[in-house]
Image 1 (cartoon, rainbow, N blue to C red):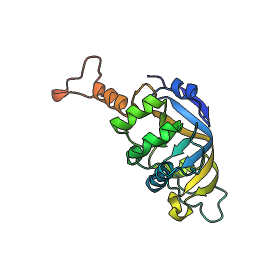
Image 2 (image 1 turned 90 degrees about the vertical axis):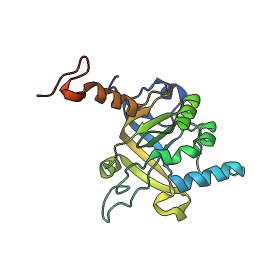
Image 3 (image 1 turned 45 degrees about the horizontal axis):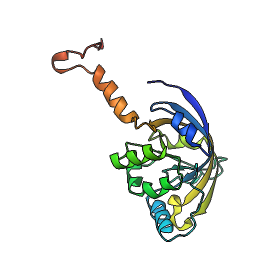
Image 4 (image 1 turned 60 degrees about the horizontal axis):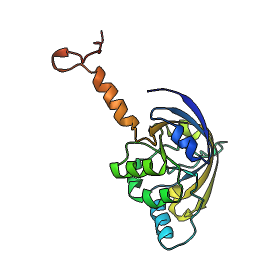
Length: 204
């Protein structure tokens, strides 16, 4: 697979999303919205009740993060902004995808059901490196609470990001970077007795 570094800007159109491939390296700029479990539940409730959502989903990107405040005296918009486990948001994906949600950011694989929905709707899932929240926060230029302020760190925030470093974890063809990475590892891993698979090379 390729290791391209691609500049992507929000809002993301379908053509751009469908042009990305699993394992592509991406630097994302523009507006990104934060939302975790509680915020997703409220948005789904709003959809079911016919109420307005806190932001337009068409072409939007949601980052699964509950950021910490910036340290006192810091010029940064936020403190740590590391991704949370994306699978927790899988039960909420259907109604959001139907309204044009084009991308999401998190960590870890998605359920088969969620992945199938994403492929059907032309949605791209970006992976962010877990444990690097302070580093990721350096790409965030501004942060503003736009909904559900009572949720604290899990409130919906509008972020302005500049060259946020990500990789394509699941593309619109259904190719999964986590599965591809696992296959690559197994292809180069010695079998029982130190015998390598065909084409493999044993480390010195």
